[in-house]
Amino acid sequence: MEHILSLYPFAEVSILGDFNVQHQFWHPPPFTDHLGELAFKFAILHDQEQLVQHPTRIPDRPRDTPSILDLFLTSNPSA
Image 1 (cartoon, helix red, strand yellow):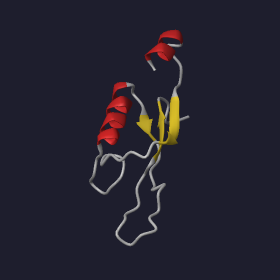
Image 2 (cartoon, helix red, strand yellow):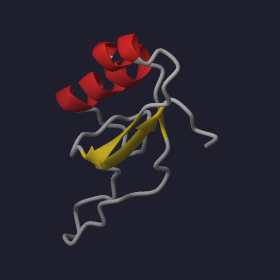
Image 3 (cartoon, helix red, strand yellow):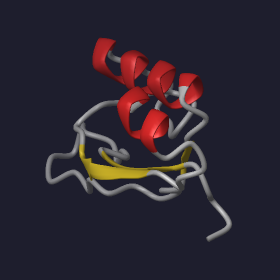
């Protein structure tokens, strides 16, 4: 990220994919795993906003809960 921004300081950067991470700030249940915490800190550090608002994983077992595993991080959320 630093390399891209050093070459293109005004670039609008989007990062998206199936991250399989959970952070309580992005979607309940109130659970954060280690990789979710790292992804959250990365987003904050690089001024990225997470746009996905609804679960991207719908459980197929009764005890599981829906969650957001796919992320769309962007530096320009209004685009």
